Length: 119
Image (cartoon, rainbow, N blue to C red; front, top):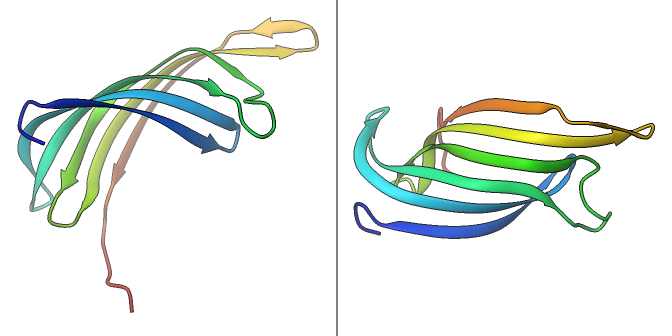
């Protein structure tokens, strides 16, 4: 992948609440230092939705789900070392004959702290 290139990927994600599908778009934006590592900074955007699974899908329906963020990938380690992701979703929950549509806004930051070699 070269600087400025983009690619897309569709994924199925198993969660504790059921399966989700993600239609993601990635763009290699720049090289950047992260924790003393030379990393590829990758911008990500996408749509997320509930997906059918072995139990028939999620008990909560995602009506509008968007994900945006940045990922820092260290090619020397072969892994993501930092990630800032923002999720925005409108959910639809039907309980006792009533529809409830809460808005979920979530920011997630993950950082690699350490690695060890396998014995």
